[in-house]
Amino acid sequence: MCKASGISPGLPLRCHYRSRHENLIAFSNHDFYDNSMVPFPGALEQGPDIGVEFIKADGVYDRSGTATARPDLDRHFTEGRLDGFFVKNLETVQGDERDVIILSIGYGPDHRGRLLSTFGPINREGGRRRLNVAVTRARRRMEVIASFFGGDLSDSANKSVQHLKRYLQSAQHGPVIFQTEAADPDAVPESPFEEEVIDVLRGWGYDVQPQVGVAGFRIDMAVRHPGAPGTYALGIEGDGAMYHSSRAARYPDRLRESVLRDLGWRLHRIWGTDGYRNRRDAMARLRATVEAVCSEDPHAVRVPSLVGTVGSGGDLGNGDAVVEALHGPLRREAAEPVEVAGGRWSREWSS
Image (cartoon, rainbow, N blue to C red; front, top):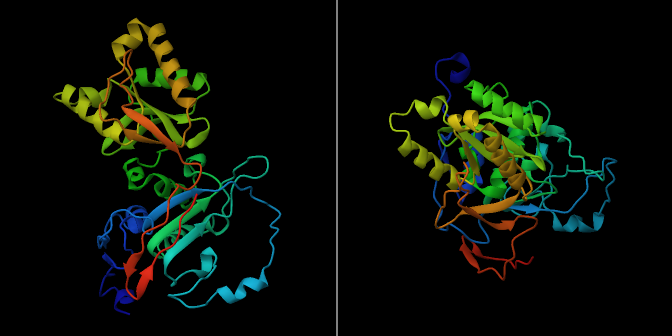
C-alpha cells in the first residue's frame, strides 16, 4: 500500500539465497538486475553436480506438435513445490525450486534445418520475465538441453528472444559472454576508411557489425560467422579515432589485444596507411584471414595459449587453441558423492 501511494519506494531483493553456485544466477543478475544482486559464494567452484552445463541434442523440431502421452509415468511425479520430480512448462514453474533443473528448449531446427526465432511464450509480452523465472529455479545445477547453439540465432528485435540467445551462449561458454555487448543495429563506422573496409567485406558476402563493445573496449568492426549468424568469427581493428585518441597508443593496444584474445576473439589489424598505399595486398590478407576463420567450427571452445604470438601481415595473432567442439555432453566417470543437508546426493555420469 505504501509503495502504491508513493510514500515508500520499492525495496528490491539484494541477496540471492537459492543458488549454491554463482553461475546459476549470473545471467539473470547481468541481464535483468544490472548486477545488483549479491550471490553467496559456494564452497565448490567446480564439480559434476553444480553450476550450469549446456548439452547439444541431435533433435528435429516437429511443427505438427505430435506428442505421446505416458500415463504409466505419472507415479514418478509430484506436485510438491520444493521436492520431488516434476515436468512443467514455462508459464507454471513460478515458485518451484529443485537441486537440479533440466531446462529443455523444445523449439529448434526443423527437418529442413530452418531455425526460426519463434519460441512460443518467450516471444509474447512478458517473455523475459518467464525466462528469468525458468533459469533461476535450480539450487545446485542447471542442465540446458537444446538442438541448436545460442550462436545459431541471429540478433532479434524481440528483446526476450535476444535474452534467450544470450542465456544459451552463457550456458555454453560461461559468464565470459557478458563481456560482449549486444549488437547495436544503429551503430555506424567512425571513419571513411572503416566504411570502405565494411563495404568491401559486404561485397564479399559477409555480414559485418560496426562498433562492437567488449569489456569496456570497442572493436571497429566484426564479421559474423556464416554458419552461426549470432557468433562473431573475426574482429577487425584499424588505427581510427579510438586508437589516436589515446595518449600512449602502444600500451593500450597491447592491453586491448591481450584482453580481447583472452575473451576468445580472433583479431586482424589494418593500418590506415597500409590500406591506402598497398590496398591490394591489405585486402588480399584480409580476405585470406576472413575465409580461414569462417571455415572453422563456430562453436569450438577456445582457450588462450600459454605463449601468445603476433602474426604477420596485419594479423594480431589469435593466441588460442581449439580444445573441443561442444556437440554433446562432456564425458565423465562416476561422480563423487556430495554431502548436502538431509543426506548424500550423487549420481552416475556417462557420455
